[in-house]
Length: 290
Ligand code: COA
Ligand code: MG
Image (cartoon, rainbow, N blue to C red; front, side):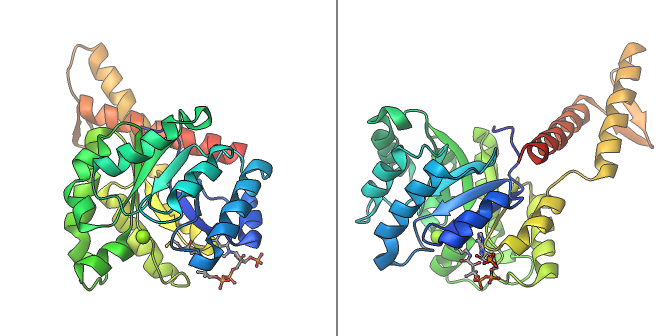
């Protein structure tokens, strides 16, 4: 799995010059430059040109850069892929993925040019078919991440989403299972009410507790909350260090398990502790570099 953090993944409409410029100085871990639904049909061609130029010239530091293209079944998809080849985003985010054939079709196009021979693919998980095929999609060659498209999914399901997103839990957890089984990143869907900080925090906490790596965002004001909720806390870091120390001490005495704060510490806890510390380190590295 990608060792970099994906706590905050900000969508930027590829047509909005001001937002594209501003994002160079925003603290998002990753950016999705969007050519799909945030761009109106009559703006598609201009957005594609503007984005290709911006990606070639602007400096987004060490943040992960993804471009969401239009589906290959649309009139824009093939041109989007061709235009992005020179800009070399590390990944193309493919919308409305239904099955692994959609991934293979994009992979074929990327293979046909040397500039994109190594470009990874991320998939929007946002259709009922896509959710049902999540395991096969996650395991497809070149796949590196899932982004949940909860608005599109709710539309297709005809469900009413309330606090706690009970009606989406099956889909969210199916995607998490598939992503973890394949060892790829999984990022939660957006929170639409971008001025409601308490609501955003609650939904970030829910996503974190489910196991997502981070949340997709629509507005810069959402970045700080996602960064804080999806980062390990000081208490978690302290506990991880103490678990490792306790386990090492027990091992040195020939014991297979340790006890810390009245709780058992086994190999698996040590593995989780090491992963948490690696995540904290990756966040520190990114924040020091951008
Ligand atoms: N990325 C980067 N910068 C953004 C941004 C984004 N997603 N959204 C807003 N900004 C910038 C604006 O350019 C503005 O910058 P400035 O004050 O320096 O000129 C500043 O943040 C404040 O913007 P604000 O006036 O509060 O927002 P708005 O009312 O103009 O726009 C949205 C609100 C929701 C329409 C807008 O944030 C947006 O388009 N978000 C992305 C939507 C999207 O990509 N959807 C697809 C996936 S769901
Ligand atoms: Mg969508």
